[in-house]
Length: 140
Image: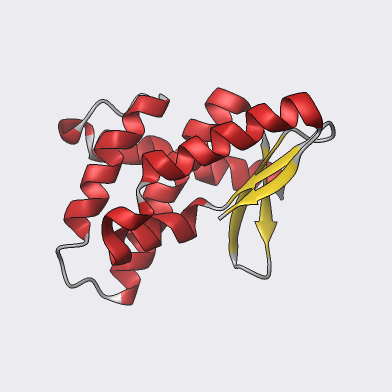
């Protein structure tokens, strides 16, 4: 299942880059999370139905996942409890789990308090700490 899950996430993230190429340089760099955050801020201005919110959250969440995986590695696993994918980075030496869909949804609904670049910097710090100490964390 992990292979199919990774394939689906990669395909969705790459579709995101094509669909929004006119809105920023979505090159899977950490810096590209800033224009993503701006798009999500704009999405928060609209009265989105549950289906639209789910769609945006999964598409943008897949992009966040792929930024993380392409820069820091990891494997995708499905969380049956949360009904969404999780990126696990560092196994077996350390473990940092990233849950992007919930954070993207929060960014749309709650505004700047759920800033994506800030969230991602917490993930980066956890990975760096994990590499040096064996740290284990889940980034919500």
